[in-house]
Length: 341
Image (cartoon, rainbow, N blue to C red; front, side):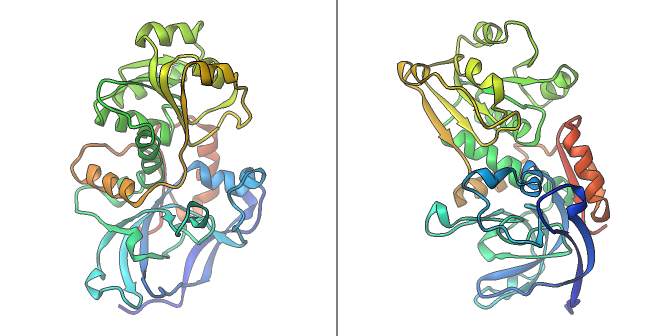
């Protein structure tokens, strides 16, 4: 295959508003180095990391120190391998792949994220390590597959850390979002029982994902309602944070777990340490997942054990419009950028 010398790509030119996203058609096509492959991107899902990186939300924390501009964002890339680097077998050419967005090093501190520290999938081509490009059998469309990588691998990591098991009660916040909806499906896949929080307008949609109990997060006496329904939850899987963190932590019974990978309602929360130590709770942060977690996820997809939920699709040149819709949080499921049609 003869590759072009340039490609279309959306460049993030700095921290700021939507004007920092610029579509260019003269970006050099990257070439794979040793142990790498070049993927022609068909579709790329959108997630909160795209927004957080653009607005500089991570700048007050420990992640994002390797970000340089311009940067091609997009962690949820799906496509086909069109070139391979040294030491990669040529039989990989033509493989349809779903990309694990975590580029791991020897330690957690060495890990890099696709679309953050390295260029990602809002482009016609992307280079990734061979081990990150997972071949996947036919069954779902490229658009459907692009709804999985970041959200579902994050959710599976959140559930694997506390070892969620059959029969346990899992409390999920933000259950209509990408990670929240994935938590519902993946917890049910493990045989757990799910009590999910969302807005009144999205209760039916979250019930359709398989949650056993769905509550409007504005429910009066919300904590009492959760405890009445469950007797106390085993695992609180939280991507919201904010003001509800402290009262919801009280719903976790003694010996239970809190696991988090986000804070869409605010990262600064109030914690009464007595709740933590008197109830023997364990708290888990979940960011850099293992290779095994993503490989397991690919297996779930191929066996039809989880279902894609795509809310809307946009073309690459509609990236600003897509982010505007994403920020309104009125959708359920993933918003996907179709790079090639």
